[in-house]
Image 1 (cartoon, helix red, strand yellow):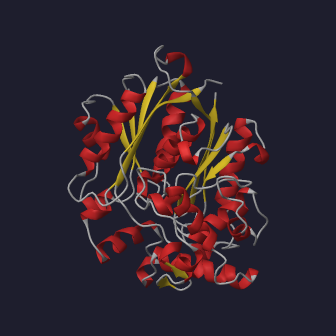
Image 2 (cartoon, helix red, strand yellow):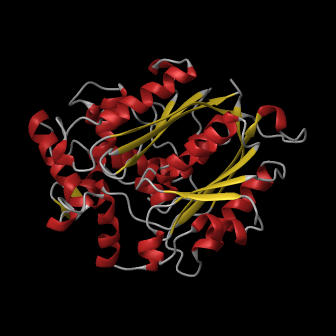
Length: 385
């Protein structure tokens, strides 16, 4: 099969970009990625975005960003899958190159939460859940995650401090990430004293909503410019899966089927087994999501995902390093751009350019994006060539 390689990467700092709009944020990331690719000219643009029509009053981002980036005339569309939008856009770019219909694809993840404030943002985020049976009742995504975590703690006898390791790991890894929103490590007592947001979730169990843009240039290996000096990284596996939108419609609310299905398919396509994965960039929008992903993918048995955070197994020198550049907790959660940030960070690892956060001899990385409580899951295996 054709080798689909990530030829260029670019990203902006994640944070509160009050002074800059959607198109400008996207352009910064695009220019960096195209330069990194050796100047490849995209034929198609896939934009991952979650909430621009609701928060920024702007739809039709494909045409908007293509025009602003000087790419008028190319195919340009927006891909929306809630928090998995960036991962879904990457998958569409991958499929376009793998099919042979496109030679060079540009994938951009973009989100601007600061275009609205407070309850307006919560209202927008609630559109990613089941409007008729969840949002209409006042259920927020944070409250839903809190109920999941409370049930998990009850069923598996998890202590109040059981999830602290996820936040401690993310913030420790975020220190060396110059693009992270928070670059300060925290101590266990900091976690235990943190303000409760929605019991049992405290402020360190929730990734902060943030603005940001990240971009990737994809192409076939044989089309790379001869002067590209960066180590090559290919997309060895790509898969997506969907589940019920409403959490209450599932047989088991504490098992993320889509995470298991998409990761399994991606690994099978890549021809690897779980033990060969050198690091895992999970979707830690909430601590409970990280635990459930570790279990669904197979790194832990059911009810024991939290233990991997408690005993240091997900640390940079642990059995399965996770959130290696800070994850969503420390880097920030830029909505539909999150999955593209994951890919940029994974490529940085596989190129051996992660500096203080580098995983030694990393060859395979698994990245996984979730839409809601795994109503959608998109998984990719990235491989160093």
